[in-house]
Amino acid sequence: MPVLIVVNDPKDMPLKFEGAETVTARTYLTDPAYAQMRMARIFNLCRSYRYQGVGYYVSLLAAARKHKPIPSITTIQDLKSPHLVRFASEELDDIIQKSLAPIQSTEFVLSIYFGRNLAKRHCNLSTHLFRLFPSPFLRAIFSYRKKDSSWYLKNITPLAMEEIPEEHRPFVVEVAQEFFRKRRPSRFRRVVPRYDLAILHNPAEEEPPSDPSALKRFKRAAESLGLATEFIEKEDYRSLAEYDALFIRETTSVTDHTYRFARKAVAEGMVVVDDPESILKCTNKVFLAELLKSHRVPMPRTVIVHRENADTVLNALGLPCVLKRPDSSFSRGVVRVETDDGFKENLDKLFDRSELVIAQEYLSTPFDWRVGVLDRQPLYVCKYYMTKEHWQIIKRDSAGVKTDEGLAETIPVEHAPPGLIRTALRAANLIGDGLYGVDVKQAGNSFYVVEINDNPNIDSGVEDLVLKDELYEKIMGVILRRIERLREGRRA
Image 1 (cartoon, rainbow, N blue to C red):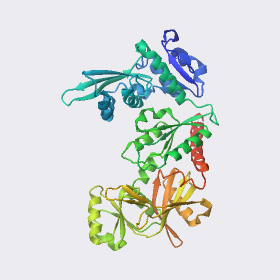
Image 2: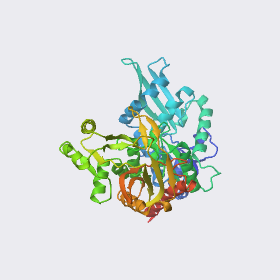
Image 3: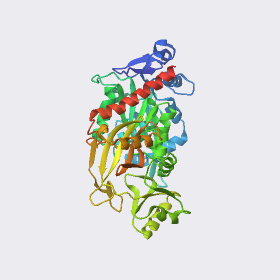
Image 4: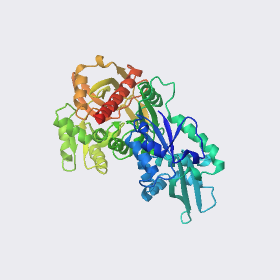
């Protein structure tokens, strides 16, 4: 992808960068050759981004041309928002205090060059501010509050090239060219990238949906198909619009940033897996119970419990039975009750968090089936075995920490019982055409859907055991085809 550095006047440009074309703002805005350029990464280094000024229009038209401008129009507007500056200060408070602790003054100015600062001590803070406000050069001003002995972000603004001190310029050129290299497609990729894919993940997540090895395989598969791929994190929300598609490989929740990422991706006209509607539907077991019941999909006997019908549940299900928090996942918020007293005690605890609770008959099985489904087609089939002397796949202690996990066995889709595949597809297709993991229990020749998961686990050596690299290529292939269909629809 070509890299363009757009400036007001190259003759006045104090910095020289290799590997990038420098063009005047006026030329970029008016020359048909740039308007017709299919792909480009634009680094807008104009002196000002004032509303309806030349710098403003460079980023605006770049977005209209489907180029990738930095800063984007969204970032330009965000830098003018006192509310977002306060948000950034609160979000990064721990990092700010740690970075500025040794400074003995009441004000501190931080110069940020492509997310870097000359002082290594401030690099972490610089990186996080750049992720929130992706702009090539930034000036952040911090003030010290004596009343609580803490620092806060007072203001953050773009920094013009002319304002960069002479002694900083060699460093700026170095980090800029490093940034260009990092974000440009490698010449060793098998296919010239046509689109950009972001994979949202959290390196600190204790039980992520994909392990590091699987994430690398996703990246390799994507790039083999022409998807330039980058791993992004929570702090990269502001730069999401730079990409053509978003693939979420972080545990999803309606109440956290994963859902906000999915919503923003849809609003930006991107392809997204998991889509926000799938997240909403799959993360609430009350919705799933009602959906499966209304479409007569077989499932264990299930009651949606509220305070008015709680006394009738045991008559309907008997003991033991299973109680589930509506947003439970990974065996958290799920409890098996053996007695009347245990039922009442656990139900009261669950009612403290939710007005509705799921109660389900307990089916004792040595394993649960999971059918991976994508684009309304079966993708993989696994057996997840219960842990030793426990009734769940994952065993946790009283603090919720995982202490044991059962074995897994992956089999070819064509070797799975046909009734299992039919039941799983029937359930998943009620949600949509995303990536789902349908959990199913088998009793004799009958199959019962326990739940439908968005963002199912895909780990190396487990779900990919049969298809290996083909599994990752299939998933990335679906994303690529959706991008192409979306682009074709826009051209039409």
